Each structure stands twice: as structure tokens, then as C-alpha cells.
Length: 174
Image (tube, rainbow, N blue to C red; front, side):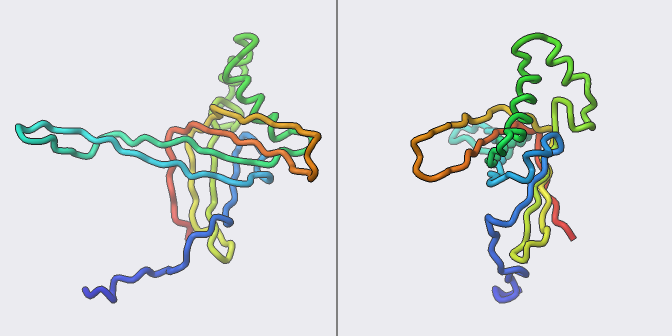
């Protein structure tokens, strides 16, 4: 095989503009998503000592980073409140019944503790190309909202959510 035979079948670059995201548990937020950061993945190492040096070997556990999503907050704050209320139920700041309410719901209903998140990556022609499924997500951080009456221009509010997840899978679409 020569170097000329080893060419990519698709020489197009990946555009950061082409994506769609859905979170089953937060239907009001899906339309307002502005950016998504695909988390990193790390594989630890195991080291074997020798008299001269340590020899690294691949580890046995993958660690998946947190998913970060930035969205525009709608005027009624419905999308912000979906995340806020989900976090309140997980953290049960007032009483145990708050957590019992969320824990009693089926994990498949999209209203329980976890929710799956799907990210569609689009081609340059805006056709679905890759599907990234984040499994068993739950919010761990919701950014603040800063109201400011001194701004000269209207800058609509955005918020960022950080989701922990068990893992994610990437699948090529036909």
C-alpha cells in the first residue's frame, strides 16, 4: 500500500455550528441550546515496577468527563426552572419527600433521577451524521443569572449546566 492509497474518504472538516441536542427530561430547553462541549475520556494506567524503570500498561477503567451545555434562558424561565427543579429534587433541601418524589419515578420515564441526552452532529449540508448518546445524566451545576439594568444593549441571559453521566456512546448514522 502506497501513501497515495491512504487518503481520507471525506476530506471535509467538522463544523462547530452543526448540532442538535435533546434532553428527554427538559423539553423546554432543547430549542434554546447554544453550545455543547463534548467531554473528554481518560483511561488510567497501571504501572509495573522493574529494577530499572516503571513500565506503563493500559488501565481497565474509562473515566468520562462532565457534559457542559449553554442555553439561552426563555422569558418565562421555563427551561431554567426545569433544571433548577430537577436539582432541587435531587438535593432535597427542604424535606425527604422531595427526593422520594423523583426516586419513585421510572428511570425510563424521563422524569426520574437520570435522563439520557442525545447530541446529533450534522454534516456541512446539515444532515445528521453522528449520534452521541449520554447515558444516565443528572445536573451537578447550574450557573448564575446576572440581571443588569446598566447595559446599553440587550444581551439575553444564558446559563450553563454541567451534567455528570455514566458514559457516552458515538454512533455513525447511515
